Image 1 (cartoon, rainbow, N blue to C red):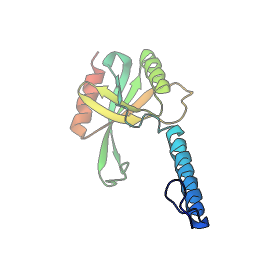
Image 2: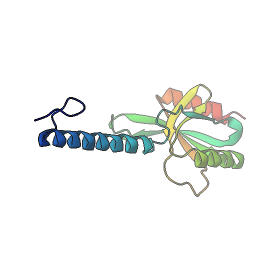
Image 3: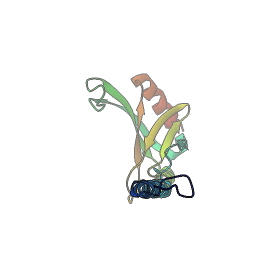
Length: 149
């Protein structure tokens, strides 16, 4: 057998190897191209967007203890502040939720924070929000802040 221009044997085995190498390179190129063109998750590393609830946008805030709502600790009661918005608060909160669906959001009341993500479409007015707290004492403080007029 003779050597070709690049020092390879010009036999049929070498032609098969070269064809397979080209095919593998083409497949790899197509895979990398497709991976580069695939859209990433919607904002996977986006910082949470804040929304502050203030007393002037709240008609009433009440404390409730819900037992068994948390799957991680089903026997532990969870402290929740049920917030009922005023008409202005309803409009502001609804607009915020509609424009920030499927994004991480921080709902803020003074120094207290609830990290949530609103999923789906919101066609109705959102007149309330359940603010989850770490304890009943914290829930009471949040309710007091929101009920100040």
